[in-house]
Amino acid sequence: MTPALDLTRREFLREAALLTVVASANALPTSQAQDMFVQTVLGPIPASKLGVTLVHEHVMCDFIGAAQTNRHRWEVEAVVKRMLPVLIQVKERGVTGFIDCTPAYIGRDPRVLKQLAQQTGLHIVTNTGYYGGADDKFVPKHAYSATPDQLADLWVEDVAHGIEDTGVKPGFIKIGIDEIKGSADRLSPIDEKLVRASARASRRTNLAVTCHTGGGPAGLTATKIFIEERADPARFIVAHSDGHGLPINRAVAALGAWVSFDGIGRQPLESHLKLVHVMTEKHASRLLLSQDSGWYWVGQQNGGEVRNFNYMIDVFLPALHNSGISEATIRKLMVENPANAFAIRFHR
Image (spheres, rainbow, N blue to C red):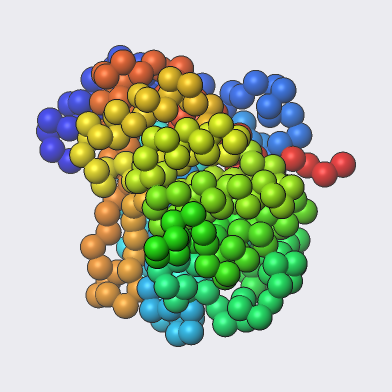
């Protein structure tokens, strides 16, 4: 961190913008928090305890493809050793909630996440689901012949009994889609199946669904399919919305789904500041922020170059506050909205 950026962060804390957010992070309105929990890799916690949260990050990724990836490709201890200091840094900055969006067949390993949660005190949340997009190289072979209900059954099984042999339960569903080239308002058959399966699993479990989108109107199309399946749009998070354009963002929010600007730090600062200003005018309660940062890259020496998770706290939130966004709105974006998005209602 450069001295200039460090000064900016200290000034921001002194002005109490983030300090207020962190100090009051445990409080959600009783009407929202009652009977609600977030499923972390260490077990359920009250949604009101999630705190300042990054909703779309990655600890580890393996991009070799579904047919070849397996646990033999990495050592848990090596991943933990590399990523532990990176997560400690962001915890020291006041972040307490960390949503790990690496799905199955791309390097999701609950064993790694559990050790990191134990050693950092972060509330780390993992997922179930399958990732389309990227020419569907991360979709396992069995998904093509399975029905949406059969896929939903597999994911609900993870929720009920834990992922594989780890006992760790997912706190949300992660899927991925892309638009069909030349037909921007349609999804491929496998991607549409993943959306429908996620909707059916969400209806049965009340888990949120984070949907990777390749850009353009694919996220809006997926939102409409999710609603067509009679799932609650407030359980659907359209990831990478900062590349979709404001008309699509507004349409998604108007349907009741979440708009996730999770590429913070990947575009010029002013670009994201403008996006947040425009969206918070009418849709502050539908907006999530994160960075899509990380990660230990399986197959590269010592995990390759890891992009840390500090930009949000060190740079973006101070700039957001200095540009006129209130402390209350920052708290909504970083505390209240993540808790509401990932909260699960206890079944009575």
